[in-house]
Length: 329
Image 1: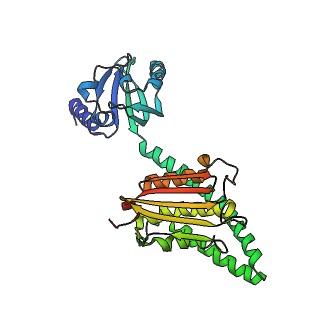
Image 2: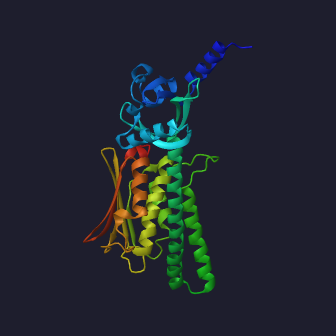
């Protein structure tokens, strides 16, 4: 049978090797022990932390939490899975899940607390990604119905029979579905191949621009695989708005797309002449589509996205890192 000393050593080894931060403190909030997990999570060594107040890892706006913790511990309460924010030695914040248990002496009196802190940064990131995906899904579904309605209206004016209308709509909706599939990465599939910029732009515009005037001036470059999805997202968003409200709509004046390469940058300008205000009734800076374009361009293409209404018309500008768009030097 193991001796009490060996059991104590075994438990101490478990605490020391845990990836979670495990800390003990007294009822005056003074740190008594600080394991390696706490060192890794908060940045303080055991020598720096032991003997100091536990509030060294509390942001200024969370100090009242410790007062509440101590009051509850004195009553013998255990605090489980409490999500909050703590502050590292370097000043950065980290979301954590806390479990705080009272520590009792031989007579059963509460003399301190044992605290386990688990880093939940990944969970928060996943939750934010899920929120963005759901927002994008709602946005895309709404756009899909709006685009379909617009395309039906355009096709109905041009079709000479129900059969022709049906055939043209099937063709256009199939093109849209194909484009949409380009913006979804299949983890189990093969990596996408690159494609000429002119082909990518023409493929995106095809279901939107029939009967409209579209002028393009594009460099002869091959878009790298990693850039196809973000570029498609941005150009598809611009085309969607254009067919609903802008240059590709029934009363629009067409579209001009120009791109050039200079000093390691790729610049693309999307112009819709005569469109001098937002047709959606929503400020451009606040729309989900604009936010999606800006986020996509900044995170995936090393650049910036802007859209503004000038006296001459709507102008959207993409300023991108050429290396992120094409493999050419």
